[in-house]
Image 1: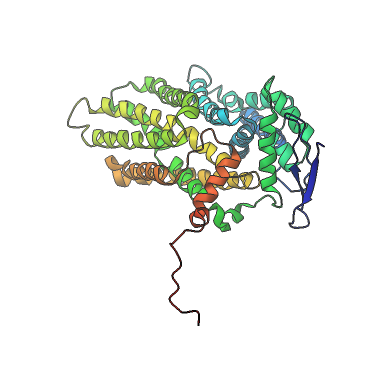
Image 2 (image 1 turned 90 degrees about the vertical axis):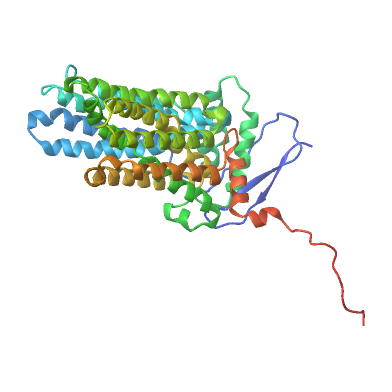
Length: 446
C-alpha cells in the first residue's frame, strides 16, 4: 500500500511540526507534507514591493527641490534612496538565490551585481554635462530613480514567491509547486521539490534566527567568520577609492579636464564588463577561484599602481601606467569580489538563518563603506603615494582566507552545503570514533 505516515518532532510549542516520513511510493508519485508552523523570514517579493515606496518619495522630493529652493528636500531624498538601496541589495540576491536552480544559482544571484554596475554606468552617462548634468536639468537627474521604481512596481506582482519560502516557511506545497513550474517551465520539478522537502525537514523545530544569535551559535562559526572577513574585504579592498582617485590620475596622464568625464565612464564600463564575464563563468569555475583570482590580481595591480605613483615624476610614461592599473584594478574587482561576495550569505546559511545573515552583511558592508569614505581624505593626506598599501594588505588577506577557509559551493544544494559546513565546524564529531588497537588487559581474572 502506498502512503505517507507522520511523526511529530519535539521542539518549542510555537515551532513543533510534523515531519513527513515517506514509505515506498510509486516512482514520481505526488509528495504532500503537512503545513509547518515554524516562523520564517518575511516574503522577499512583498518586501521589495514595499521598498519602492522609498524610491517614489525620494523622486518626488528630488523633482520639486529646485522649485522649492530647499536643500533639505535633497538630503531627505538621499536618505530615502539610501534606505531603499540598503534593503534591495540584501533582499534581491536572497530572493534570486532561493528561486534559482542549483546549477544556475551563482549566475542568477549575480544579476544584482550586474545591474548595480549597469546603474553606475548609466549614472555616469546621464550625468554628462550634455545630458542631465547641466545646471538646469539636475533635478531631473536626481528624480530619474523614479524609472526603476515604477518598473519594479509594475513587474514584481507578475513574479512568484520564492519556492523555498512557500514550502519551508509557509508550508504551502501547492504554491511551491506552482512557483517551481512557473520558474522552470516544462522542466520536471519532482527532484527539486524533494530537495526542498529535505531541507524543510532539516529546519523543523527551528525558528528564524535573529542577527545577534548568529554570533552566539558555535555551529555557524565558519559561516559568520567568512561573512565578516569577506564582507569587510569587499569594502576595504580599495575599489571605491580607485573611483575617487581616477579623476586626478587621468589629469596627471594628460587627459584634458573637459574630457575626464568621458574617461570616468570607462571605469564603470570596465566593472560592468567584468561582472558580466564573472556571471558567465561562476557556475563553471566556482566561487573560490573567482575570489582568489580577483583578490590576487587586485594585489598585483595595486602594487604596480603604487610604484607608478611613486615614480610618476621620474618617467614621463608612468602616468599612463597608472591609468592602465586603474582599469585593470577595477576589472579584477568586477570579475571576483564584486559579484561573488554578495551571494555568500545565500549559500552559507540555511533558510532560518539567511535573512539575519543578510542583515549582518548589509550593516557591515555599509558601515565599512561609510568609514572608507570618511577616512579616505585623511589617508590621502598622510600616506600620499603609498595610499593603496593598506588596501593591498586587505586584498592579500581576502585571497588567503578564501583559499584556506571558504568551502566551494558550486553545484551543491543548500542542504549539501549545510552538511559540509557542519562537518567543518565540528571536525571531531564528523570523524566519529577512532580505533586505537586491541584492548590490553594487564590484570588477572582474580
